[in-house]
Length: 183
Image (tube, rainbow, N blue to C red; front, side, top):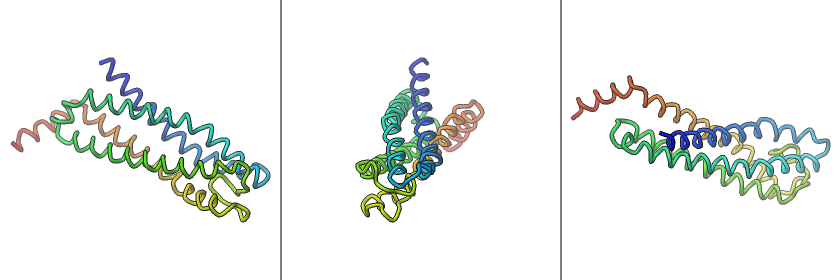
């Protein structure tokens, strides 16, 4: 029971930080960077914010993954025996892998932008006419990806809620009856 509580906490808190932090940065930091006063300062502000968030995000993702492994280990019997739990687990894994991939690629692009700490930009993910082409290209890709990460992690929150509902007694009973009649 204790280990399941710890793994569930790591899973949920890590996912909450991953979702909330990337959403907040997309909504607030990238737009706020445009208010810095000059195109050079805008790039510096956006880079400073994202560079400060990156290690926190890495810890959040690590906590989520560690918690996910603990949840799978603690629920392996349910995953194999309760109808639809295995399918949901596979779906959550696929969305997690997609979110990890998009996050990793965003970090690669972010490092490309961050290497030019005072590059002139219009905002955190909006190049200016003076932005070097390679940085402008990375920013345009980041502009789309900044919304994809919270979409994927938000989907994980929803799937986790579904998984929690599958543990409720009425759902288990209905599923067990359905399973018995299928045999």
